[in-house]
Length: 248
Image (cartoon, rainbow, N blue to C red; front, side, top):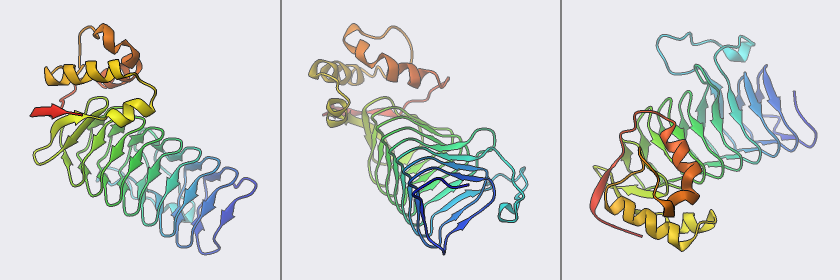
């Protein structure tokens, strides 16, 4: 089912159980299998592959292109951009989701059950393992690899080629091998509307190895209560280690 003003290439394959909103563009060679919901204004590039079964050996690899639908679906939220050759798999127990206005760049991979927040960027060549949850305004650099079940909180930045094997706290910068928290995403904090006082307080917390996993939130960080609550809601977190020196 498609909405008005869609621009679907005649060389794309749209399977049964795919719902297309208004103003959706789909390039040649793209394959979208159901159950999948593509909301309004989504742009999908040539050769993108969306909706294949989860890569889980205990689940049937159903031929969805024949109309035989299964699994928990995919949802691409309004205004998202999925570039050429990106791969997004069905969820096994929840819809694999790309948040509103987020970008998934060329050759990136989102495995089953991944939740990607709004206004985030998954750069070219990034691989995100199953069950990961990624917050809003996150930026993951080219060719980074995110281990399954990892949590990346709002506003975090991941450096190019980083193997993300632990959880990443809000508005931190993580890179290196092994990965370390090396700084604060000052630009991201400013763009999200937080003051310089919040930036200073967060930098001080991370320098003291307080990654806001539990306990009372410092008064100066109360404006970050919502991102911190989201971070803590994911249970037993295993945060990334902090570098010896941490700066903006």
